[in-house]
Image (cartoon, rainbow, N blue to C red; front, side, top):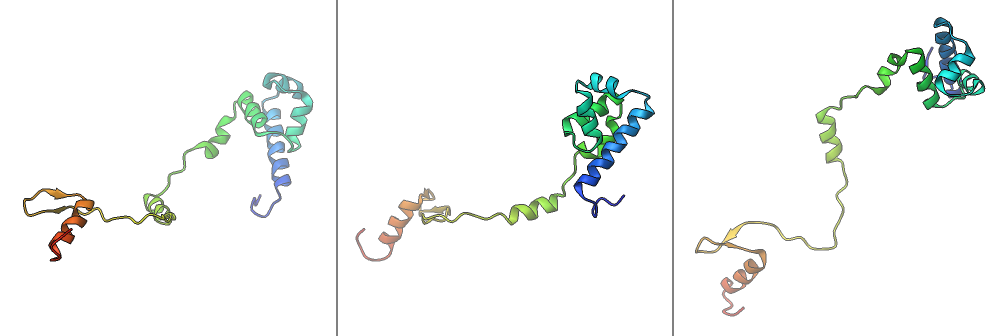
Amino acid sequence: MRLTSTSNDVIAEEIGGRIESLRLKHNIGQEQLAEAVGISRETYRNLVKGRGTLINLIAVLKVLGETERLNSLVEEIPVSPLLLAKIGAARRIRASSETKTQNVRVSNPSGKPITPAKRLIQRKRDSGRGSW
């Protein structure tokens, strides 16, 4: 069955048919299965027709001992580190209204670091104007 060209309703009905086949394989009646799952017989019939919920589907598979059929859906899907880096690089960086100063380590002649505000004052004093 090609899932890509099939409608959601047809896929749901097909899954319901597979659930019914599993029930028959295990030789369990609809009423017995519904009672074991904790749902009504009508709810089970809806599930088989493709109109059930995912919770009920999982519960039926558990009672039938067929939960391994869900393995491909619940296994962790590894993501390439290169893809993660590419996605991270594509993130938008928000613009800021504040002017950001460069965080550069500058030191005065004595070797002590100067903070950005002091660096601006230092530049004015060294600019030859003679006053701050």
